[in-house]
Structure formats: structure tokens, C-alpha cells
Amino acid sequence: MPRIAVIAGDGVGREVIPAAVRVARAAAGDRLEWVEFDWNADYYLRHGAAMPPDGLEQLRRFEAILFGAVGDPRITTHDYAAGLLLKMRFGLDLYANLRPVRPLDDRLCPLRGIRGDEIDFVVLRENTEGPYAGMGGNFKTGRGEEVAVELDINTRLGVERIQRLAFEMARQRSRRRLAMADKSNAMPHAHGLWLRVFRELQPQFPEIEARHYYADALAYQLVRDPRQFDMIVTTNLFGDLLTDLAAALQGGLGMAASGNLHPGRMGLFEPVHGSAPDIAGRNLANPIGAILSAALMLDFLGLDAAARRVEASAAAAVREGVATPDIGGNWGTAECAAWIEKRLRSA
Image 1: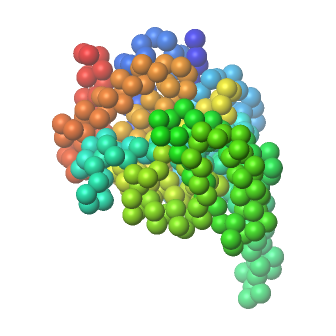
Image 2: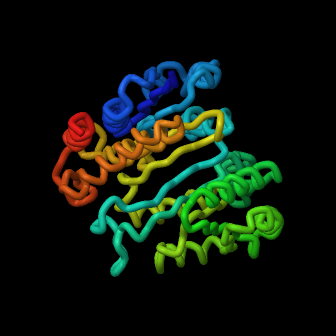
């Protein structure tokens, strides 16, 4: 039986992750084992670390992680987030960040003249390299001549494996289109590697319509007409930016799901909205991003039918006006999730 590590984290994560677990249980029944971990800001403030020394070893005993959010106003240093979410991403080598973009209803898409069902693409973001690798530093800190450096780290292994995965995923999709985005015109060394690898892989996948974009041009095209895209692969930093833009096409961050994957080994699944401390504990957070993240997890674990049922029930909720304030409704977090759970159990 697959085992799931549940880490609700901070803020609204403590509201949306229990809701997502209930929905996933309604869809998957007793085919999964759920184990909760109390790794959050309170744990950090008690112990001075975001997880125990053997935390990663504990997590390696699980097939997947369902994670809420990291961030608490009481903690202003970077080492907390780095010691929890980033430590899991890097330590477990979750090199592929998966972000599906598909509005559940026409009214969620802000673009005039484009229906929600016309937008259906996936962004695959490199997840363990780039500027987020943490290689850099400060010299003469606080002085007028201070120097701050952040290095954009790209390895042949890292670039090739994410791009190859993107080609393979594009092969499984109906339109078989792949766009790769970088800034090789301005960063000819680091991102020149991205472009060279892309050109080398293209002949190995002749059935894929593969096209290179500069990241700023791709951002423009996403706003102009997102219907032209099917699969996008890009760097860690630009993937972070482009996927938040893409989230606006599906109704905002509250609707956006994500998976951090090492295919065949482990997956960490999380809504992308963050801990939102300003609304935490007020029953206002949208649970659908977390619920759709749980659906991605079910897919990853081979429970495809259960995943489709969760997605269909979430879409039905939006269509019927069962919505939190961020998407124009007046339902609470708990009530919205309970409606979806009830629909699953009665189907």
C-alpha cells in the first residue's frame, strides 16, 4: 500500500491540506496510508531546525508527500524555508516541477474571447538548479561598495534530464507540441547549454513539434494567446515566474496545483499559493489548489480513475458556484471542500 507523508506546514496550509486529504480519501478509499508530520514554524521555533536530522531519511520511506505551505511572520530568516521545502526538493532530488494549467470554468479565464476549455497546457520547470541552488554570497555587506552574487548553476545532467522528460511527456499528449524557454541571448553560457541540449534532443523526437522561445517572448505569447501551447519546459527561475503568470489564466494561485517529481522514485505535491498569513485561520483560503495537487498525487501513484473523479468534482463545484471569495464566491474553505467530498462519496 502506498504511504503518504502529510506535512500541512504553516498558515492556510493547515486548513487546505486536511481538506485535500479528506477529498483524496473519498476518491481512493483505503488504498493509501496517510502519516502526518508536525514540521512547521512551531516545530522550528521549538527545535531550531525545520525538521529532525534524519528527516529526509524518514521521508524516503514514503511514495509521496502532500505538503501545504511554508512561511510564518514570526520567522524572518531564510534558513527556515530552506530547511523545509527547499531541503525536500534538493535533498530528495525532485528535479521536475509540474504545473498543469487548465481552467475549470470559462469564467475563471481573464482573457477576452478565450474559453476555459481552450487552455490546456503543462509547464515543466527544472527544480534543483539555476539561481535557486544557493551558490553565491555577499562581500562588504552593508557598505557602499557591497557586492551581492547569485550564480545560475546549470549542469548537463540537470538540463538534459528535464528536457528529455518534457519531450517524453509531450509525446503522450494529443497535440505533441513542446516549447522551450530560456534567455540564451542574454546568458549565452548558462542558457546556451539549454539551447544546445534542446537542439540535440529534437532529432530524437521527430514526432514532436518543438520550438524555442526566449522567456520574455513566451510570457508575451501566454498573455496574447495561451491556446497555442501544449507543453512548456524551462529553467528554475523562469519557470517560477511563468507558472505564476499561467496561474492567472486558470483563476489565480488558489486554483493552481503542482508536483515536485523524481519520476519513478518520489513526488511532493503542493498548492502554490503559499502560507497566506493574512487570511490564515479565517476559513477563506481556496482549497481547490490543494485538492487538485492531491489529484496529481493520485495520478503519480497510478490511481488514475480516482484522480479523474477528484478533478471532475472540483470542476463541478466551480460550475455550481461552490467557490471561495478569491474566485467570486462566498463559501468557506471547509464548506467548499466538504461539498466536493460529499459529491465524491455519493457518486
